[in-house]
Image 1 (tube, rainbow, N blue to C red):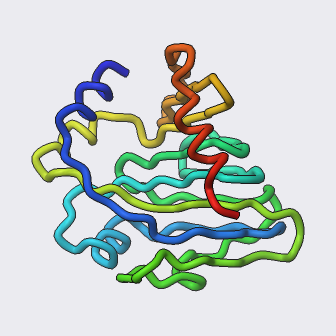
Image 2 (cartoon, one colour):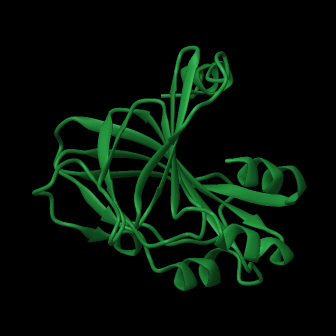
Length: 187
């Protein structure tokens, strides 16, 4: 993770929140392919990084040829190259393309999506970051996704790629900022 720290120190990022969402079980949403997403959101972008913050609830995250990950309240998943992925309430939920319930574009305020079967709700904040083109080769060297698990005073980062899951130790106390931010996220 030293490479990630070095990259984050020098990369200039811009970005935005796409939407906030309440997905009620059963639900399953499939992201668009990275090229389609980039052209819709930021056509000049060379490198789109997606993130999903699970404010409340739980879900599964799937990315082709990668292990299935489970998220809980307070977790953040980051797709460092915007890889296509599916998020769902459970394994038997049928995937719906995100583009059928949300149209990427320019909004004054991030839209609030509501989707699913009316059961237990998972709440998300979903967005993207755009990094400088000149750093795209560095980002390409990073894992497909990072799963950040933040609990009170604890944070763990799991790097996930086709080779599996690699946990990373994070200094004690580093989870406080994310936990506090999520605690005060509006309902």
